[in-house]
Image: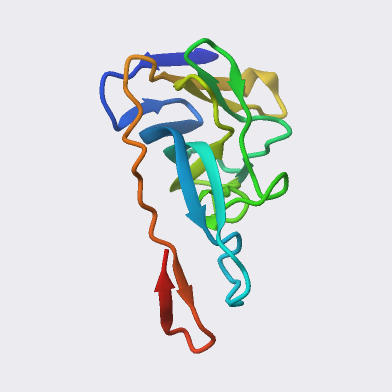
Amino acid sequence: MKKKLTIKAELLPQKIEGKYFDMTIHGFWHNVKIEGMEDSWRIDDDVKPVKRILNLIDIEFFNKTLDDFYLDSSIEHLRVFDINGYFLKMQSSADKPLPHIVDYLDNGMHILYTSSKQRGFIAFEKSSIPIGRIGLMYQSDSSEKDQYLEIDVSDLEPLSTSIELKLKKFDKDHSLTEEF
């Protein structure tokens, strides 16, 4: 088994298959404006949407292991680098308010369940240079099972900055009150 697998993306979606995980990049955006509610469950009228400019990835994982795997920003399992190789920090509402749909801690992407596929948006800090590489580090109790998967997207243009993520606000009786 190779410890590091890297592929060069020619178009999206791009998938890389590892021994323990598969990772697919469906899209990525550079410095896109994201607006939405910080919490999916808040319905208070006085709560204003959060607005942020971020790098955004539409990503899918397939966890082939028999263990749940936690994406953790302190360990940096998911690693994103700009075209010049500089590391971009994963964003979460634990650090600064973030719209629910791109907050991996809140949108279900913080835990990759055993033997399952999961897809969602994950946000990274804004940068002056677009994303160049996206990697996933799998570390187990035994270093013999460690593996790093990386997709090089440096030859691809980020998707248009006009992404529209429909976030809906419901009132107490679950009637749609407005769309963001």
